Image (cartoon, rainbow, N blue to C red):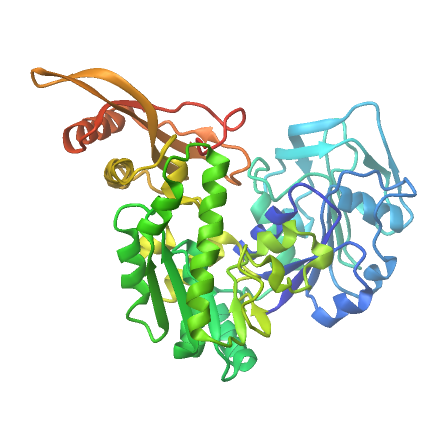
Length: 509
């Protein structure tokens, strides 16, 4: 059983990031709503508790407040931003809204005798984002950091092991923030650092075997990172009791269907590959409107899945690749509730199964990738680029034909190959090619051409909610352009998309 830290969620924008940082320190944590009953917390037997930030003012009656009994558990508590204000308010201090507010990078002065700041410079930059602050600390506390405008940038009650930070140590803008969290976890909470993917894999496999017993499991395998890792984990746990249905709709990237089959076809599981390219292209013929394309593909996928599932008969468990951000984003108050089968990623209602298993529901994306490597999945699957459900259908602008798809597949493969060769495949978070509907005049050899314009798209992002266009070196872009023009028929012009999100989206359709 791993040591655990409980993170109480007060609605702050960085709450997932706090959880990720704690796990990066080798300590398991779970996010719970701020008003979770105390017995739920004590059941977890946490070694520490963290209060997150939040958008409210603690002194308002309607503001979220946790049970003050949390401070009597004898467990170390760290309050961050709204969390320090909650701690101060509930323990008899005072929080006010001053004339001056602090947002962004701020010079901060630390008392390095405080355990949180051991090994940290006495002055450094922290990331502030607050309107209110603590102007009177509770009895038994002392101030351990300040800024030019915030008198209580940090406070501690060393005897009761209660600590508060007005700034956000979890964001990269705070210098030495990771060290501060590490100090809280190891110096204050006594963490051992027992959260590793190797340990998780062993525990998860044992748990899945106990839960599934001799039952049958069905998984819709897309070839994406989450479903691939879920398949590998379930395969290790229950082997031939698992059936993976992989629908190749003909809208995948070059060689992807074969790569998925190579990764899973030889494992001790029932792997069903359905080659449905002709069927999907027939349904999409003449359709150019993006949303219409999406609906056709989603509907047809369900029909194909239904047909294959009927051949299997009764299934005891339906597996999903749900990951922890999905659980948190759906509301931490409902995090323990298993979703009904009516909303399982658009799968049909009729499939006869008793329960859902979600073997990745406790993991963040980076942890899912590490688990995939731990389970022996090839790197090309584990580090697979994000890929939309409709596949290349929304990267071919306008009407879809097999000829256009094959052209795009070849061009996109060159783009991805050269990005990897240049060593940019981890720093550019997403990159792909788009076959536009625009044709233009060109000259190749001694002849005139009238061919398609291909757009290249590369972005850097941490959350995919916002993104900046990637500054791919000109010489790399030039080499990519030359290769595509020389090797792929039907394209005579290459453009590079230099639009951020917003105002654009990452995908073109």
